[in-house]
Image (cartoon, rainbow, N blue to C red; front, side, top):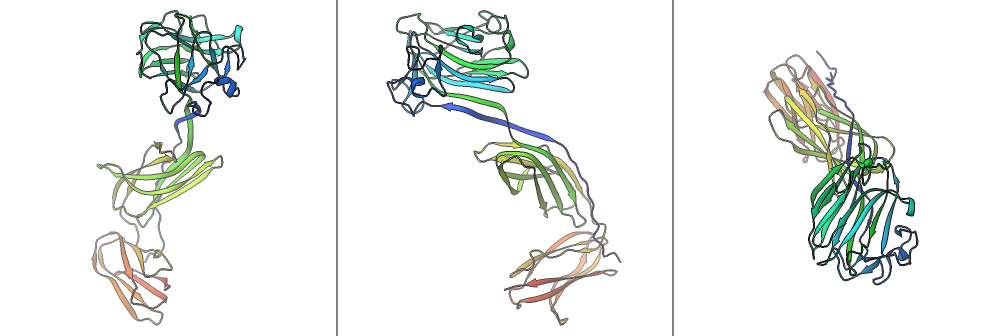
Length: 409
C-alpha cells in the first residue's frame, strides 16, 4: 500500500528578453499658442541653430495645416529649428514626424551626430526640392533620390541602429535608403551618436514653407519585461505547474497563459496579473488542472496596459499515467456548498469514493465502479448537509486513503 504522494518533475528553463518600443518624446503642438514661436514657448524641448529661441530662426505655430488636432509648426526661409536629442550613443531609435508642403515649395532637414552650431557634425540630410523630387545625402553625396507628394500629409522616419552602425531613411511609408551610419552625410565619417534633428527653411523660392506635425522619438529596443526563467512540471496527480520569474517589469498588465496539445493550436487557459512597473525580481506560478495524459506545450503572452504584447518561447511537458494511488485534498476547503476532489489510480480496478460524517455515517457515494489507470476529478455538492467536518475515503482492492474537509455555511 502506497500512501505517499509521488511527484514527477520535468522542468525546462531558459532565459528570454522580450522587447517592444517606447515613445520617449512626442509633441503634437496642440498645447502652444498659434501665431507665436515654438522654441520661444518651449525652450526646454526645442531650440534654434544658434540656440536663440524667440529670434528670427524660431519657427511659428500655425493653424493653416495640421495632421492631428488644429496646429503644427511651419518652417519658412531663414527659420532653423532644432530638436536636441542629447547625445544618444547606444540602442536603436526612430525619429518620426509628418510633413505637408504646398505646391511649388521646398524643404530641408537633417540628423546631427554633433549639435554645436558652427562645429556641428551631420549624419544625414535631405532636400525636398521644388517639383516633388528630393535628394538624400547619407553615407555619400546624393546617395538616393526620391519623390514626395504636394498638398497632403506624409510620414518621414530616420531609423538609426547605433549598436550595429546602420541607418534607414523612410518617406511616405517607403524605405528610401539604408547606409552605414558612421559614414556621415558625405562619407567622410561621423560619431556613432544621435544628437539632434534640424528643420531648416531653404531659399529655393522666396515663399518656401513646410509644415511639421506629430514629432516622435521612439526607443525601438525598449525592454518592458525581462523574463529570466519559465519552467513546467507535472505532479503525481497530473497537474501541470508553470513557474516563471522576471528580473524587471515595465507597464506589465498581465500574463496570459496559453496551451496546445502536440497536434493542436494554442488557446488561452488562464491569466496571472503582472506587477506593473518594478525593478524587483518577481516570481509567478500557475497550475493547470485540466490536462489529461499526453504531450503539451505552453507559452506566456505578456500584455502591457496599453495593449502591446510579446510571446515567450514555449516549454514542453509530458503528462504520463499516475505512478501511485493518491487522494488529493479537496479544493476549495473550507467550502460552501460544493468542492472538488481529485484522485489518481495507478492500476485499473473497482474504485469507491465515499463521504462520511464524524460519527461514521455514509452521507454520499461519489464514485462506485471500475476505473482505468489515470487521473480523475469529481465534484461534491453538500447543499443538503449541515456545516461541519466530513471525511472522504478513496478505496481500491489494495489501497485506502482518507482525508478531512470542512463545510461552512
